[in-house]
Amino acid sequence: MDREELLSSLTQLDFMAVDLGLYLNTHPDDEEAIQAYNQVIIAADTVREKYEEQFGPLCSFRSYAADTQNWQWKNNPWPWQSEFNYSLAGKECK
Image 1 (tube, rainbow, N blue to C red):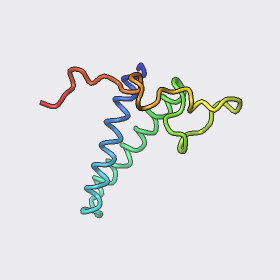
Image 2 (cartoon, helix red, strand yellow):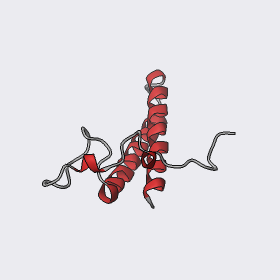
Image 3 (cartoon, rainbow, N blue to C red):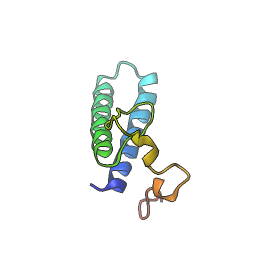
């Protein structure tokens, strides 16, 4: 997967984790939802690790510093730069 595909996948998985977390706030005994939540978290962590291996850290406070000689966080596009935002062309809600 390229950078855009990884970010899109991670965005979707993180959204699912938040959504399931909100559901579990009101349905704390739903074992199926708990299993789904844990699966989504594992999947998101896997995608996050793959992204960070290829493109550098996503968060300055959550990611390991892979390079002990260079703080890579500063190398990624910043949120106000156009490269930061991946394209959702053709994936808009209808």
